[in-house]
Amino acid sequence: AQKITQTQPGMFVQEKEAVTLDCTYDTSDQSYGLFWYKQPSSGEMIFLIYQGSYDEQNATEGRYSLNFQKARKSANLVISASQLGDSAMYFCAMRETDNAGNMLTFGGGTRLMVKP
Amino acid sequence: SQTIHQWPATLVQPVGSPLSLECTVEGTSNPNLYWYRQAAGRGLQLLFYSVGIGQISSEVPQNLSASRPQDRQFILSSKKLLLSDSGFYLCAWSVTILTNEKLFFGSGTQLSVL
Image 1 (cartoon, rainbow over the protein chains, first blue to last red):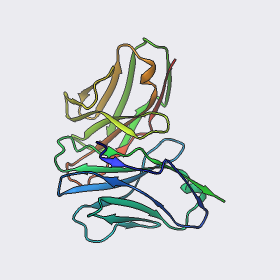
Image 2 (image 1 turned 135 degrees about the vertical axis):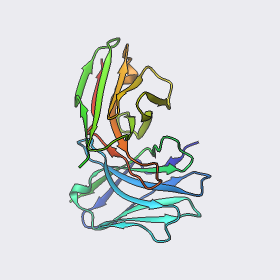
Image 3 (image 1 turned 90 degrees about the vertical axis):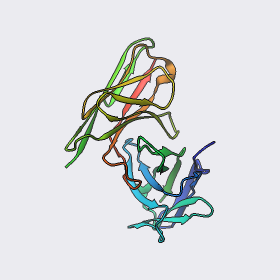
């Protein structure tokens, strides 16, 4: 079964508008971490934001915020005031505590395209 | 500060040829090291990870192998490449095993097997 599901393969958003990228996850751990990465066309992976399973408040980092709904097992990324430079692939990822190698499991990604 | 170097940036190899991709990390000791592969337009698939010298764990059976001859060096290899080995290969590292520890990625290698 997929541990991380991103149901939107591609999305368009108008410049300066907000956009929500969906992510649902599957884990039986009580303690886990959720991450979002951005991958521009250059291929590098850029860390955006982190949410811990015990964090009571939604994480925010500048224009990025994470809408964390633990009961629904969702961790959607919200980008406010979209900019042309936000056009990229976005990946949701999870780390579980029962994880000897401390690796991240990634979703399939969402390609975001910002329209001028 | 810590940096990660991955090379080459692009590689075109014929089917059946060997492969060696190298990744080195600077500015940290005993990092956890990872190799991920990304097929075109797809997510990242973990191939190998290493928590120490000579310690390699494989996540997916395949035509590839990994080695860690030194603390901060991680090598991805193949004796005979297949067409299906084409993809974007990313090396990454982390320090702790804490849940909130993010991965730091290299700049990637685009491998085309023809």
